[in-house]
Structures are given as structure tokens and as C-alpha cells.
Length: 136
Image 1 (cartoon, helix red, strand yellow):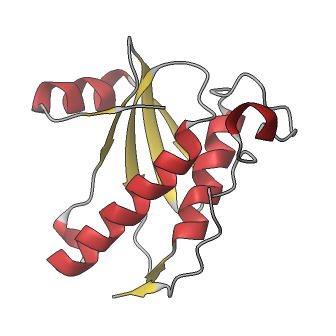
Image 2 (image 1 turned 180 degrees about the horizontal axis):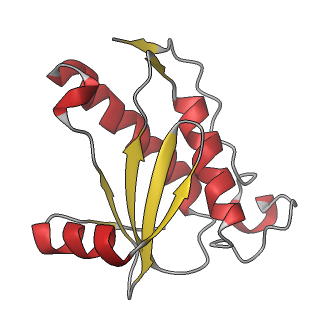
Image 3 (image 1 turned 180 degrees about the vertical axis):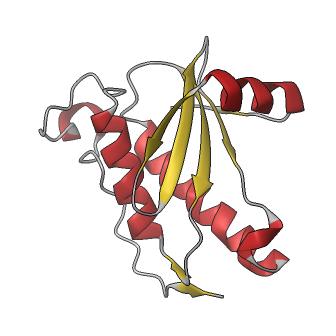
């Protein structure tokens, strides 16, 4: 699924003010139904130096991309990670998939695999990436 980036401050503000929040162990997802799928990551300076923040953003973007195929509705999504000592792609991908299923943003998931439609089981990364956890 192709998605656009959210760039303008008024879009961020609207999603944060009006959007629905869903929490998981490693992150918070704020979403708002919209005309097309849009996406952004909110990572502030409290997460560490720029190298850590940029890696965290890359992990979140990839985790969203691997789960975006299962979205059944178009919505604007903000991903806000929780502070932790270590960050991993597998945890982010798992939690994003869980939130999408819990919030019923996927039409064909009822604990079943959507492998027939998406080619990827819901909540699973496209390819299991075992990378070293990111430490601060």
C-alpha cells in the first residue's frame, strides 16, 4: 500500500487533538480516518542523540510499511515510541500489528492470517529481521 508523509504542523496538531489513541508496550499510535493513508513518526530529543533518533525513525517506518498492507481503511497515522533502553524492529512490527487488529483497522483479521490477501501474516514483519537491539 502506498502512503504519504504527514509534514505540516496543522496536520500533526489536528491528528493529536482529534485522533484516537491506542497504546502498546513499545509505542503509541494516534490515528484519524482520512481520504488517503498518511503516516508520520514523532521522535523528540528526549530519545537520545541524532544517531539514535534517526535509527528509531527508520525502524518505525519499516515496521509501519510491513503492516500497512493489512490496513482496510485510509487513515492518518502518527507513531510515538515509548522511551526504552533498547528498541527493536520486531517489537515495533508486532505492536503495530496488534494495534491495527485491536482497533479493527484491518477488515480481514479476526485472529486469522491475511497471508492470502497481503502475502504477510498480520502483525508479522515482511521478513524476520533479527537486528541488534538499539541501546542508548
